[in-house]
Length: 283
Ligand SMILES: CC(C)=CCC/C(C)=C/CC/C(C)=C/COP(=O)(O)OP(=O)(O)O
Image 1 (cartoon, rainbow, N blue to C red):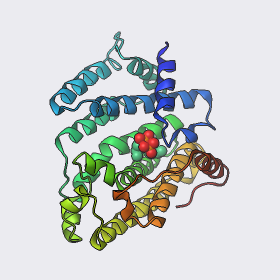
Image 2 (image 1 turned 120 degrees about the horizontal axis):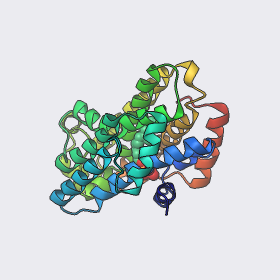
Image 3 (image 1 turned 180 degrees about the vertical axis):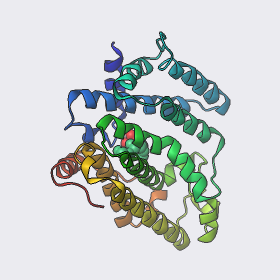
């Protein structure tokens, strides 16, 4: 199997919310985003598949050394995803530090099961999603460098939405991403989340989290220069799909994230993608 065929299969099998956004792109950009997606997915799976943090650390160290070969003259990485990324990085001038920052983010996840302040959580989000946004923006193309700031902020909005949607699932793994200072401010003991027993205080905490994530989409969009709107359309579709997910969570009452994972059905995702591609996205 060729490296790109491997990445396509990996992306297809993931059933990600974002693949609908790739449909309207040229084959070249679609393949590049598929390779970047496969890289993020492989790293995520590598960590998730290890029940022991020490083993996960070793696996990530292997990925770090194999990914370094992408940028080392005359070297070929061993993993098919890194091999595919070698061509994509050269073609779209992807910076090494942004690609390795994603590995740093995954590693952070092994040590941090709690974040004290929102700024600590934001730093994690930058590493696992902000840089992904920047890399996506580089593949899609831009004229104004401020587009990178837009993409980084949209990455934060998406990651905050993901954290909100997955509060219950993460709690079952003993993880709470919501900042501890905010749990205290809203009088929500960690045990409420870990034992999945919604309370009025938890509902208020979630309403605050949902509002802030919504505000982050608006901040991101305000940063996108007009001249790059067309080139960045596929990223806007990704943002639109996740923004619709945030609205669903809000309409569902917010606190139900403790009980089940809210999803947008595939046909609605495709309709949304087409609508945003044709008419734009205004959160
Ligand atoms: C410019 C731009 C587009 C910025 C966004 C950057 C970006 C895609 C960040 C990833 C954040 C995220 C929530 C990943 C989950 O993916 P998943 O496939 O696990 O999601 P799923 O669980 O909803 O399918």
